[in-house]
Length: 275
Length: 86
Image 1 (spheres, rainbow over the protein chains, first blue to last red):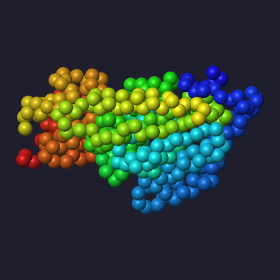
Image 2 (image 1 turned 90 degrees about the vertical axis):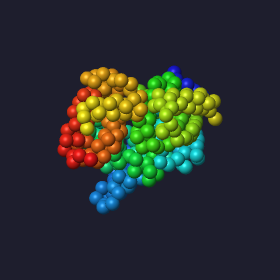
Image 3 (image 1 turned 45 degrees about the vertical axis):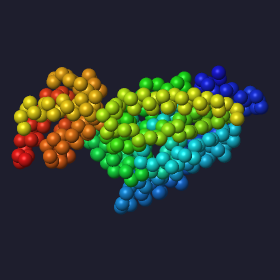
Image 4 (image 1 turned 120 degrees about the vertical axis):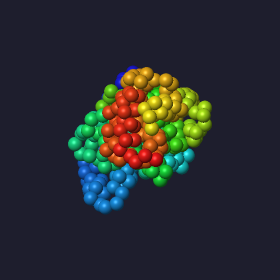
């Protein structure tokens, strides 16, 4: 498999065998340069300005994160022309919703943040303890995953603010499987995102990502820059659950969303590989 | 508000809001029913309605360590005692 994820086509026939790994490494280094030097030169000053600016700091940080990752995927398009990107235009219209999505690769959260300027998400507590990065996540208003320990009060505050955030048009991005799928199948869903949706009486938008694991495969350092691939993000369904219906159940909501995710992922199987 | 009244009101909330039917009064809700902090926030809203007054941040923080129905009943009893009777 040469390090390819399951369900990804091997397609490097047009390149000499030695060239593809070299180009993959070069693309990876360019993207890491964007994350480090590019961040410091092009974005850090704006983050610092936002950090010390009076007013809505979290909103400014969210927008900067959105722009940073848009820049990242813009760069991906330039340096990896064999990657095709199909982003459902309907996603742009989603607002004030809990956006739930399947999870295949580390680039999935970045992809969704690049779509939604006003967003928040749930982050693992260990990420919050990373210097600078953790500080940025906190100032972006992201929600700590764990409710115990030093982040407990922050989580409480964020949850209390969530109804207002969603009512103002922000989106909460969640990957309810909690971890990346290694075989493409949709795993069991954690109920947390749906409890927040119920708490806020918020609409639920179900998005499906396909083939991101073919570009950045779990367990690999290098991007598969040379492989022909089509990454797709599709809005499968958007609905307001009948929270006040006596028949409403969280289990029923989970089941509905899991069915949407599974069927959506199966439909998108047809676009994998060479376009 | 008596202890029995509070316990019955809480059991009704657990049934209607959290789909948890007749939990043991000393059962650890987190372990037995995956009752987490998001549920706790929702429960606190219901407790505010029950008491007819808003909870302070400190009162909400104190609730985050609670694990059982009996502890919640104690918590609500304490809150009720600290508020003027309706």
